[in-house]
Image (cartoon, rainbow over all chains, first blue to last red; front, side, top):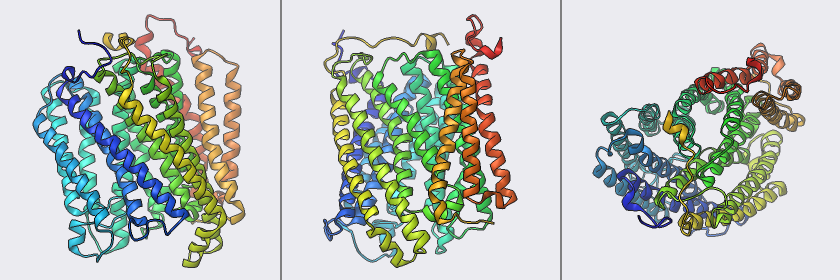
Length: 483
Length: 113
């Protein structure tokens, strides 16, 4: 028997080997997100910094796009990780899956290089196709858009065909249906119309529905699998709850889209729809607190993988505060009129994306690494545990500092720029140059440095965790086996 | 239909909206903890948290001018009912989904005795 703690790639199935590639790129892109975010933050404090070399618009684009893509790589990797385990058969079309991984990675590299090398120029049909589509958050040129859809369709084929050949678990069923939406809704972002209201209408389908519906469901599937693996929760319970949570999420989340339609020129009935669902959207989150306490009471938080469980718990809190508290503070149209698009929104976006998605992908990385190291011990008194503990602390401390700082800047903007200044051009600059805004940006940068330190520690821990362990993983999965 | 928030009420709106969610979570937490741990004395605290939520919703509704319109007044009532009943509904789902697990084990859930 090979020694515990050393990489056991040969003992992993094809999907898991592929998943490790996706995870590697995901962490590299996470690093890129942090780097470009830090540079953009510095440009808030010193607008001349890197002017003409690496413009703010490009930094911001790279910061946001890197986040979208690293999470996507993390999600895809996580699904490939669990696929053979869930379906009970080898992945159908593994060769295609490997090819798609390299195509996708190469495409991301090319898009990033083009962003960096062609920062200014005329906006023409050719630039939309080859350089930058110009839609905020989904700036990827049209060829890359098509490439993303092709990659997701190939991914869908791998997942659906594997489940069809093997056994279709409930997690598998929800996952397959979700991937249809993942590929389909992205198409809405490729629809071009010169009417800005119509353009924004469809653009929000990608930004809201892609992220707040399909990603949430994907995370629900990963969470279900993660709870089975780390806490030994019975499959029947987890899968029942997956259906309940999907119903709650779709019930309030799909038409919650309406709160993005308040100010883009869509008909007035969106105030009614958006206001109604925005007011009721947090209720499922509050209700889920009950379920969390119920499960914690039954399972006494025994875990085979403490870092993964810690990040799963962080996901529950992050989702609650980022999406629930930070969202509801400014979601009603009576106040959203003043906060929409200010640093307030950025504060909500940072906490919600980190809390709901980044935490879950990191949890999955630890689940994967445990097996990669030969199903190594990762419970209490793990050797070198200080690294993951300090990483989770620094990442959260940095994120909370950034979020609070942006909240103060956003509060100032909503008052000075929006309510007092009336949102005109001069008011915009009055808001941007106010000392409260600048102090918020300064503290945001401090938080960014702390977050960066946490990221470095996280990357180091991911490379080394379990390396010096000789103990095998604890087994608390008796319930799962019996179910 | 919409009456924007007055400048002087900005902080009240932000704070009361955050309080709605925080009191909602506290209510849900104490409610579930009381039942899972068979600690009935926590239940009054849970309902005290709901009273905090109720007050927060009313303050939010007044500051955001929600009572000036029938539609928004109905939403306020739905929020109050939703936050009150959701923990009860989810608790029943929890008990239901874990039911067969406890067929042979003593049930710790005090309201089912």
